[in-house]
Image (tube, rainbow over all chains, first blue to last red; front, side):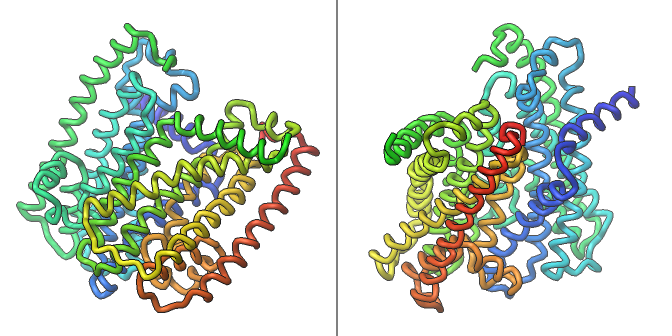
Length: 261
Length: 258
């Protein structure tokens, strides 16, 4: 079973990356991630007059990059299947739809973690982050938890592709909401109180804070609380996603309007 | 068919098709709000001059560029997907005029995202609006839109021969916002990267726009002249590119398979 799962993950990865040559992979996956991080950190540099240590922005924006993998890759699973004309086959097949998404989720979890690490190193070298102060264990833990929670949110949204054709609108809006409420670019405390409540209901807000604590910090109760909160949030997303996919799958079979928008 | 008719018909069809797409509605109506909030919160404690130049104008330009570039680059992909690319390419009406009509249509709609961004920035943050020279601002805005149109034509031609349009068009948004200094001055970039910025007309257009609203350490002519030169250069490049595409397409016959 594990072998079959791994082979499906590998097939999914090939479907996503197979069309890209090495140069395109570098431009699209690596170059674009670094450019996105650079853009936000350079804005921060301009706003702060270049006199403040930019480590927090480098960490925050590296974490925020997992949005593109987790939200778009997983959230767009069924949308991609619709595009390739296999959505109907998948819906009527006896296979668990959750398993179909989990194949993508495993791949997204891995790639988003690698993206964060790579972007952090690249951004850190450009903006002079002091790598010596980094607690690697805490940092890796924060990365894994951030990817886990974001993947959960992606799973939750993936189900909507069975009842709407506006997935990319939804996913793009979600990505921007996550960037705003992640606290990667500005402190959420400067926003109205209701915005701070919203931030708590989305992934990244806690893991970005945890990631920042890994710089010059050590394991503490506050760090553990942040990660536990994020893991709980992720588990909630997974559970809702499980239930939602079951319900929406039934609706889509009953209505039979999968490709008739 | 007269050239103006081709452009107008293509423009009108394009506007109807474009506005029916949900993704364009996102770019035009929803994205401006989010970008304005991100930039507004980042620049919240910055000076008033910075706020107008980099939040009010910056978010407007960012969204305008996204809408124009995404739609213009994506149109080629959509035509290919619906198997109409080779038809419009070989139609008696000039392909260049059809494409120009499409880009004009996208531009008119995309202006909505610019004005919405500006409106959101003013409504949400109520910055003191200070403009050095209103007529210069309007002139600079027209030049900026012209620069964006020329860049869009160039990009659309460049992507005509690629079947990976979707990959490349996703690479248009952030890198151009970065290189052309939509939301921060390009002087913050390393000198080597600034040299790349100077190649693109939007860089000069944005600097001219900023010159019209705030006190900046550069003059009108040192931006206006490079802007005209780079626009002409890209227009000529686009014309040259079209000849190559035309030849390749006729010889190889792989437009729909490229």
